[in-house]
Image (cartoon, rainbow, N blue to C red; front, side, top):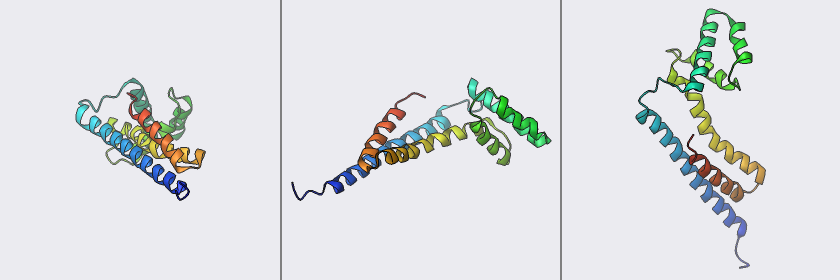
Length: 151
């Protein structure tokens, strides 16, 4: 047992756990995208909360196109949904998309944040523990819990 290189074993175990968690995360991302495109037959209909954000962002888009910039910025401060960061990303999409606003574009920021959640969680776990195998174990548990939540 004296010749066992434990740091190398921990590093290898951490890499394997990270690869497993990354596969689970990638599978969840692909499954979510597949579900949205193939199962959701009413992609143009949003739920209540997303519909409010879409309408508010659409109003902001119209205000900016009409040159009413202060009225468009006021929506960020008096909005019924918080934080306005989500609306800011959606508004940027609306302004840069050649076809203009669309309900499918309104869900893109949520999907991007969902995808970014996995590497962010691993990075945070790695910074908190400073050990690859501990961070990988935390990331694996986090990924399994996140994938098994219904929303």
